[in-house]
Length: 310
View 1: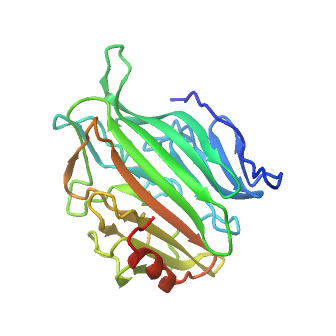
View 2 (view 1 turned 60 degrees about the vertical axis):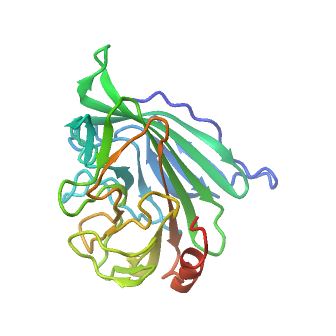
């Protein structure tokens, strides 16, 4: 399903008269660049419309600071994994499944609008208006039924000597009554904000509570998780995912995988979460992309010992 997209502008750092953030766009994708270097590619439309378990509305590739790919899309082990994305295995209306957003079965995503909210010398914000469509249910016109309206946002901050910082905000509003979402229907409870990063053999996990070993089920780790390894060319670099401490369920447990899977702060886990039209569900995460192994002590100082995470 193709989207009708509103794209507003290229971002300029007007004070210096050159483009700090810019967009390369075709009919299906947006590539965000900072000073000519790629940050990520966002997929407005499904790049694999003839293939099962494929979708629109995801980020791939996400690049490191040397423009090398960090993410994996549609790997053979999990065709429904798409770079950096979010989805939930169970979506129901009045207790009945209306599709599987996680594996993209009986569901579709329509990106209605993409636009810049504010871009300047210090940051660039992009907004996305997305409809979750049930292919199992129809509205009064015979079209796929809109179950959830998502308004999401990503803000990318000017790169300095430290890591690249990206803030993700996801707001979910039900468009029919009785909508619930939940994680996988097993003791793992995976679902939500997911990062299918490369998994080198030396991948290590360091949490707000210290080093962590992945387990079959979700593990505790506090409000942030640091991923360190030779993602590209045997050069050690790192990625950090931070949960906003004001989110429900904070700190959310983590689904961690040494190989062949995504990394996921799982929310709401095995619980069933009703969505409220009057009070949209708001989820917020920060992603840091480091040029090196990262400074864990600095992460502790910033995200574990201060009142606010983000």
